[in-house]
Image 1 (tube, one colour):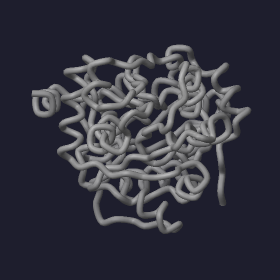
Image 2 (tube, helix red, strand yellow):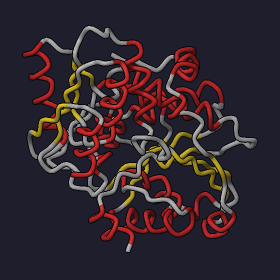
Image 3 (cartoon, helix red, strand yellow):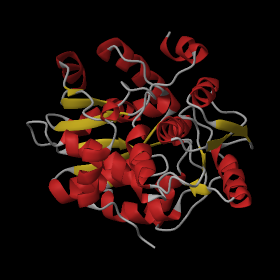
Image 4 (cartoon, helix red, strand yellow):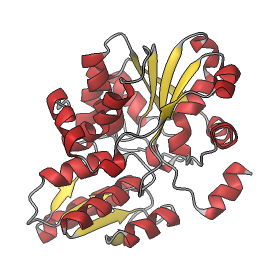
Length: 316
């Protein structure tokens, strides 16, 4: 079944979502444009309490939810932070399942925002299976990022803001994890700026969403062994993949080295700390810059949760 974000609901979400997550900076930088050879509008979704875009979708979802039910989700880290932050605001018990290998900084933050944290499995998808079973066992609502349409509608408010920029975009480079971000943004862009290409970006070592989108069926991979944990999808969400047929024009891959280069470029030129999944748009802009010459593009820096050890490794 195809479930697409509703444009009216994206616009309502924009009026409802906690202002701490809205109206993020969007700007060009001459030095970066000169380096790339085209205009790139950079939208920073990292300057909020959870350092990622996930608060938009989680706040919208929880504001619409039955407040009498406890909530359970799985997360690589940023979605869980958003769920924990927003559930605490509404006084709803929140349990987050994460992989035993999850980023320790993200785990610490989820606990700090009041979530009960349970570690299960060797990757995100294994943790998700455990979370779904646990929710059924205790009679809680299981929230699945990108399957629950509110997560995509909240993310769609990013496109709403981006279109206030005083120029037309030939394309927007959007990270592809479980699909909420690209489906929310893609639905809004298709409705309001149909000439703008929606280009998804995945990590070469986590191609399941790209393969599934290309073949119009769910393609699971044995692993998703990328440093970009926020987009390390091994088992795609079917509803998100099928929606992408209506929201996405193209998908490009970036390598692990591309991600490292992009994180350092963002740090040097923009003065921002980006986690690997937050830098994939810039990685694609750099890798494929020859094809975008003299155009105007935009991308989203969607997360900046790096542990001190990662900062030393990635940004040195």
